[in-house]
Amino acid sequence: MESDPYFSSSNEHRATQPGRFVTIAELPELTVAPGLVLQPLLGTGLMVSFARYEPGAEAPLHAHEEEQVFVVVDGAFDVTLGEETRRLKVGEAAVIPPWVPHQVTASDDGPATQIDVFCPPREGLLRLLAKTQ
Image (cartoon, helix red, strand yellow):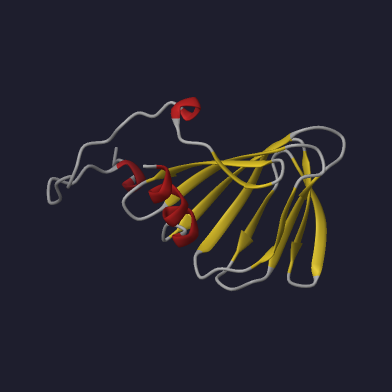
């Protein structure tokens, strides 16, 4: 039986560095707005940011050059992409291309958590991280 190419392990390529395990609670915490704390995790070509919002906390309208995927893991958010706003709940996501203006507000019903993936790594978060070291 032929193996699925998704799981192929070609010997043609070698890892450039080892993998690593991370405990999210040990990542640095960056307060970027009232009630909004980010914990960025940096890879070689992407960044994942774990974001905790207090009820009603907001990431104000902004845009950036990095592509972003926004995934809701707890609570609910009102997310504006360009001219459209939707309420996103657990298990829903948004894809935010470069330079699309967007805004996020956590529901007043309780704290909310989301995960952002940035490619390439978000320059603004890299600058904030550098200040903590």
